[in-house]
Structure formats: structure tokens, C-alpha cells
Image (cartoon, rainbow over all chains, first blue to last red):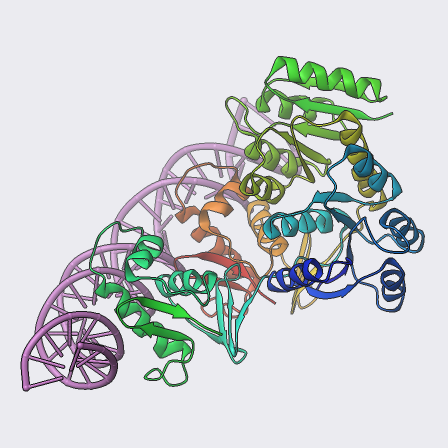
Length: 224
Length: 224
DNA sequence: GCGGTTTTGTCACGCAACTGTCATACAACC
DNA sequence: GGTTGTATGACAGTTGCGTGACAAAACCGC
């Protein structure tokens, strides 16, 4: 398991980062100031730190320097400022990478992985999408129900991932045919059959689905 | 003194990079194609490689994979394409950093310094990857099962390491062909055969594999 | 170089699992 | 109650995978 500490004063951004990283499989913690971050890192060291530059009180550069003084932990700056001076200063201060907000979570995650590989820290975690008791891990090709691994076929898995990726949104049979099967046209009943089979496996009561719901006339959606 | 190899097909850009890096105090060399780059790096290893993604012939991604196969050299992608997909793919292929052209030379230089600091700081420990009874030490080239050394062939070993490095993740036959054999295309059954042979050696009951699992339609993965 | 040994890649076969189709039964809506 | 849309069980064709056999290639000690 991999721990990430996020130091970011904007609550919304911090929360978004934490949630996204959690989905990517990291164990996360967040603080709003450099002082808290330094303290937290001493008490309970994470193995990667994300830090904003513009922080109230102690600024990001100083925060990096102090983190670096204690520790060799990989540090990634996540900043709104896209300015060579800042980038150079942050890296000079001891950061390992610098990304500019807004950043795609996939990119951030890939950069964390690359950095972790280089730093020879803990192996990268496998992302998991959670829907109550139901856990889907696209990278691991695994579906678990209440901790128990559930065997699903390739088509079922793709279907489930597609639904999970757009969790909470309805996907029409047509969309699913396109995205899962790559068919531009075809019998939409095919989708029904596979949804049915999937329900047998992942729903406690397949007749009364909790997660994989039908929206009559619209399609299917996956809910939490 | 630091040696940098620049792989970039555009003469003007390559020259500009080389001159700028020279000014920054690096010892530099440049080539225009991936093939030349790989050869040059074998003959006269630089301690950092800058590579463009869009190269004639062998593309940048493949170039990165091949560099990485021989070597742990820090790799920075310098590309005109600012696309999450490319960034993730490049980092995934083994790059350490990705910067978008045009890049301020000061920033590039700072990133190179940060990367070199990190690369130097972790002088190859000999990690042992453990999967229950199964131990793999990539650097020592050894596989042990319940303490007993197991003789595996080079191909089997590479395959196993590749799987171990991405423990818990599915790797498709295609990915394995690429990463272990370096084939861009080829018969994917080859992978099956080697997986089978590997199982004979490292699984108690090769018919019911505990670690090297098949995910029908997806590929193989190594689990704990 | 040379002969033997190990490793590697190709092939064919057989089994088991999966897929898509269809027919029928069921539920929701008007 | 009729109509439309959805669920489900059965089935046959297909696909994907494991395996053993074999020949080419690489390796190795001499």
C-alpha cells in the first residue's frame, strides 16, 4: 500500500485530489498548510508528498526544503503557476517533479508511478473502483463482491468496466454495443443477455438489482 | 561531468538543444533516429537520455522500452505533443519525465538535475520480490521456491520479472510479447507456451496455478 | 570448429469456457 | 388488456488456452 500526503490549502482542490488518488489505489491524507504537512509527515510518513506552492504561512518552497531536510521522500509540486522561475526554484529546492494545475489524474498517477519506480519505493498500487460491496479493478482484471473474488468473463468484465467508468450515468444499449463490442450496429438484445449474466454474479438478488439497474427505455447504469 | 544523449529527428531542434545543454555544462551528443540512439547508447552510454516521441522508423515509445530493457538510465521525453494519453504511455514505457516543447532550457536543466539527484540517491539495492513461497531477485537473476533455488531459463526469467514488476496487474499477451521479446507483432501463443513452462517450475500444482494466473481473454498476472 | 546439450519457437490437437441467437416468459406502461 | 420493452434459459458454434511433440537455434566445453 502506498501513502500519499497532499498539502494544498484550497479545500475543493485538495478534496478532489484526495478522492481521485484514492480511486487510483493510494492511501491518502490531506492537510491545508505547510506547517501541518511537515508535522504530519514526521508523525506518520507518507511515501510520496504532493505540495502546492502558494500556501498561507510557510510557502511551498520552504516546505519542500524542510521536507527534504528530514527525508528523501519523493515530492511532486502541483501548482497553478506555469512559470519557469517557479519550476526551477521548486526543483532546486528539492522537488522531484512539477505539474501544472489543472492536471489529469491519469497523468499525475503515471508520474507518481515513474517517480516511485525511480525512488524504489513501495510498488504502485492497483486502482480499484468501489460500489458498496462491489469492487472493480480494471488493471487487475478482477471483480470482488464483499471481498470475495468473482469470476467474470472478458465481455462481462468489459461491460462492467464501461458502466463503472460512467458510474451513475445511463448508458444506452447502443452506446454499450459500440463501446464494449465495437459494433456500430447489431442486436441490442445482446446487451440484455450479458447484463443478465453479470447480475447473476454480482447482485445478491439478481431480480432486484442494487447496482446494475435497468432504466426502462433508456439503458443501464451502475450506481453506488 | 554529465553526458546527455539527445535523440531528435528535427536538425534545428536537436542542434538548439545540444548547444543549450552544452552551455549549461553538459557534455552532449545527438542522433536523429531511435536506432542510432540505441546503438550509440550501447557503445558509449550517456547518463541521461532525451528523446523525442515522433521519430522516423522506430518511434519514441519503442525506443524508450528498448533503452529501458538494457539500462536504468534516466530518460526524459521532450515532445511537442501535450496529450495526457502520450504522457501516460511514455511514462508507462519507462520514461522518467515528460516535458512539452518548446521548453525553457533552464527548466529542462533543473529537471535533469532533479532526476539525476534521484537516480544517484538510489544505488541499486538488490530487491527481492516475494509472492508467498516464491522469491524473485531481478538483480541477482535468481528464483527461489520455498527457499529452494529454481533453475529458469533467460526467457522465463524475463517473463517472470516483467510479471513481477507489475504484480497484481493483468498483462496482455501482446504487452508481454513487446516487453519480454521486443516483438511488435507475432504469434501470441508463444507467450502461452512459456507461461506453461514457467508454471511447471514455480507452481506446486501447475494445473491450478496460485501465482501465475490466466485471465481468459485478458492475459496473465502474477498474484501474491 | 565440433558434437552434445539446452533453450527456443512453431504446430496441432483437445478440452473447457464463452458467445451470440432464439424462443419464451415476465414486467411495465398506457 | 394490449403493447412494448426486458429477463432468462437452452443450445450450438466458436474461441481461447494448456499441452506434448518436434525442429531450429543458441550455447558450451573442448
